[in-house]
Amino acid sequence: MNITVIGAGNMGAAFVKQLTRAGHKVAVTARNLDKAQAVAASNPGASAVVIGNAAAQADAVGSEYGSARARIGGGNGLSLVQVASGRRPCARRG
Image (tube, rainbow, N blue to C red; front, side):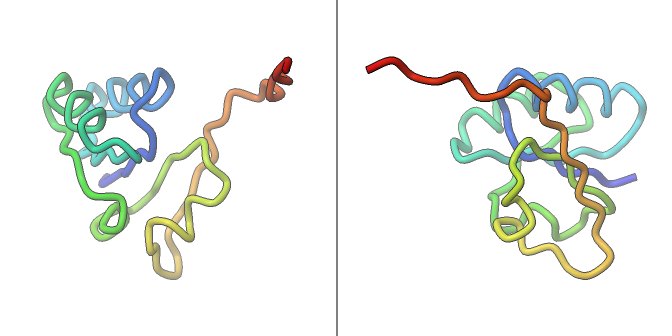
């Protein structure tokens, strides 16, 4: 399966690692392309892509971001899997 992961932080990197180990072809993208490239380089079977092209070859997309569908240009029928941790955002103290 061709899977795109949006996000190259701790969760995104963990998903890329497990998905490539399972034999999937994984594309990873992030706001910071250098981070996406580092995650891809650490996981054979993964590649970094520019966010605008993220869904071009994907069967499914995993993201922590609810607004991901608008960012990736996914077509009809593309599965978008929300992979948020479930934690509530922490309030910042001023």
